[in-house]
Image 1 (cartoon, one colour):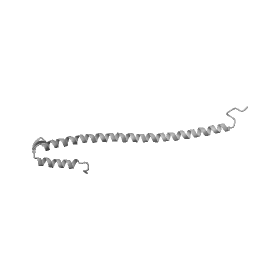
Image 2 (image 1 turned 90 degrees about the vertical axis):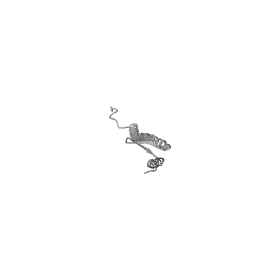
Image 3 (image 1 turned 180 degrees about the vertical axis):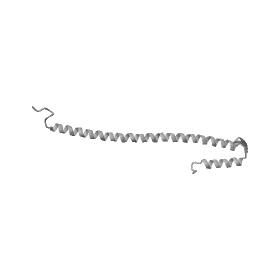
Image 4 (image 1 turned 90 degrees about the horizontal axis):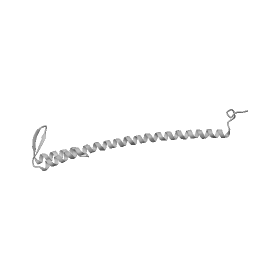
Length: 113
């Protein structure tokens, strides 16, 4: 009597082996695709975090520049505005304030540099 383990592989066994091999091949391909998508997602996440960081920094600098601009604008509107530099009180004329304002505008202009 021949047991099931000792018999020759049948057509059905051969077909099942092929199906199993194709299934393994498909699984490996899907795992590679999943790894690529995970890497792409990681890149997108890092780019998003960098963008948020840059926007936060830009907003902070913009607020600082707006305060500085408004301060210089208030000073320019007065005849002689007292300015504190290293603890020294200075009175500036309109021409001096205008020259400083122009220099600051040139320095902080978005096209500068």
